[in-house]
Amino acid sequence: MKVKRALISVFNKSGVEAFAKGLTEMGVTVISTGGTAKLLKDSGIPVTLVEEVTGFPEMLDGRVKTMHPRLMAGVLARRDVPGHMETIAEHDIEPIDMVVCSLYPFEEVAGRRGVEDQVVIENIDIGGPSMIRAAAKNHAGVAVVTSHEDYDAVLEELRETGELKYETLRELATRAFHRTAHYDFVIANWFSEAEGDFPDYLMRDYRKVMELKYGENPHQRAAYYSEVGLRRHLLSRVTQLHGKQLGFNNLYDLDAARAICDEFTLPCVTIIKHNNPCGCALAENLATAYDKALACDPVSAFGSVIAVNRAVDVPLAERLSELFVEVLFAPDYDEAALEILSRKADIRILRTEERRQTNPGEFDHKRVSGGILVQDMDGDSEERDEMTVATRRHPTEREWGDMIFAFRVAKHVKSNAIVLAKDLATVGVGAGQMSRVDSTRIAIEKARSSLDGAVVGSDAFFPFADAVELAIGSGVSAFMQPGGSKGDEAAVAACDEHGAAMVFTGRRHFLH
Image (cartoon, rainbow, N blue to C red; front, side, top):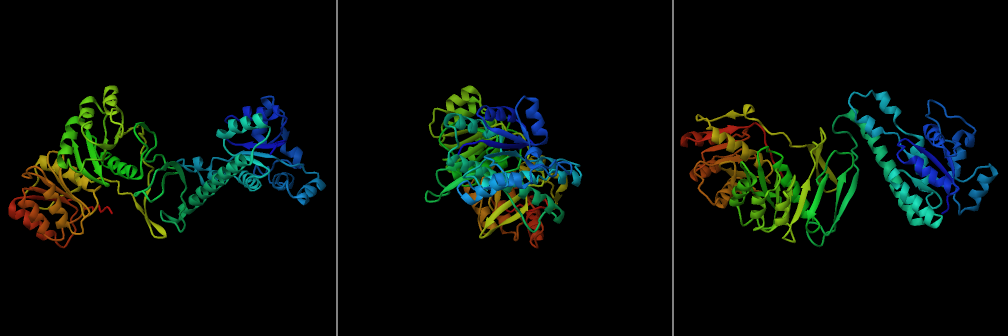
């Protein structure tokens, strides 16, 4: 498809002068509007004003510019339908072969604090989406360019061949419809805010980040998508420094590992296997934290995903080189540490430079058959002054620290979750059982060291005293749980009988 006439009307004027100049150098007539036309004229680029084509001036403070039959017909007329071409010729309308348009920044303006509704509404583009959709619909004969990122590629193809191939036109049209669809759903969501946090209709837009070799299992196809419009996602500002392509299960486990590390400010090592922690610890340095975390369950740590919240140094790298690790995630790596780790071909080494926080009010979505469940993120962590000591004996300071640590880890363990901890390290994890006493039993059985003086973090209340008695019998001295059960009295009584402490947080943290 050859380009003879192009309509250019852009809000984002990045690169538009060079693009328009490139078109005119190839003999293309440029039609333009308002500020775009002024910019191009001031740059010495010949421009035909839209009003010269339509015979109508821009009006209503710029609300009406391009919505005119002499433009729309020029865009929509099918070049392969003689009747269409005859009709526009009868009305002295010339075809328009390219539409270059970027839209008013509605999403940016609507996202600012304190902006009045009328200002937001004035940033709803009308003519732009109409021209884009018209050109995209007629993409077999019209090129539609909606991003400055496409300027160079379009000019290069025109210079090399004198025309644009159908595959290019189709790709540009696909991007155009995605752009207008996203634009409209952002507007619809803004209007729906008046209905509260859970409106009648909920629209989300996702963009593919990467193809994946397969899904949870080799027979399942898969890809990773990020939600458009959020500040950050799992791999935003993340660079892979070494290793094979990330897989579906790698990403799923990485999300769990990052969530636990984000709970803590002290040096932290989190070891994840099948989306549950098989070890987590805090210490004065990462090497010590790793030793403590690995000691929790060294067998399960084989083939794990590990996340840390400090730069990886040589002592940690030397330890990690002795274990088969699927993914290592860290904010940075010492040069010597990276050299040690890179000797192993299979380890995927990721560096994150993401420091932005998640969007305020971001929701959690869980897929169910034919729909999604939407809920608030379980992002808050309870503080000590919000908790209640339910037993006669109050915890020691060491027990307080260990319990808060265990309870924060338990929030990220599949329910029913029991975390045994000592000296700011997990020593046993019971996950995903249908009864709390079974999770407690598994956590105790997994422990490889003495549980004397260990503490329990439980994601939900103890409905009966059996799990509490079982833990106390193994040496546990303190418990942290949400409380709120009819069985609270029996659980507290069991603690009082044996001199153990129990703290109620007042908030449950189921995870399924």
